[in-house]
Length: 179
Figure 1 (cartoon, rainbow, N blue to C red):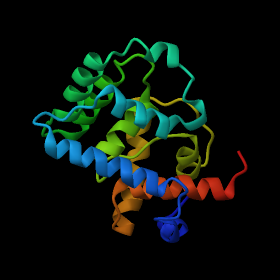
Figure 2 (figure 1 turned 90 degrees about the vertical axis):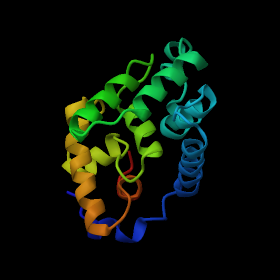
Figure 3 (figure 1 turned 135 degrees about the horizontal axis):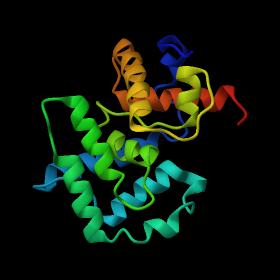
Figure 4 (figure 1 turned 135 degrees about the vertical axis):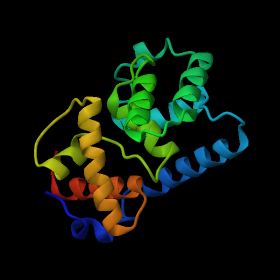
């Protein structure tokens, strides 16, 4: 299982670090500028390209049904809602984002992690493998919560934003695994 010590030197070493920073900064600016925080179809597509990389075209037929109006409405609701029970808030946000066609837990987690990098992480097989030492390629919301809890623990230990700890874990896996 990965530790904070394992990734301490990888904070800015990820090959995606600069692109990730640019995307997070853009979303932070959008959040400041818009009275209601939502994503346009172009911003959502940028997140999809960032998250899915070479798998971008997988499920793309499904995602075609997501019009700009629908993306704005769904992301606006998911990104703007708040609740005193943060566990329930996460359930709501994840499930609302997953109502977009072609969006499952990994993509929903990417939207949240880029929009709220101090709070959320991106789940994928690399992070899961490092945190739990097992192979997994599909995820439920409860599994995401379990993963997020561990990444938050590591991030607290490092005093980093949650998303940056997650990206360093991802980079660590790239460096230590061939697949």
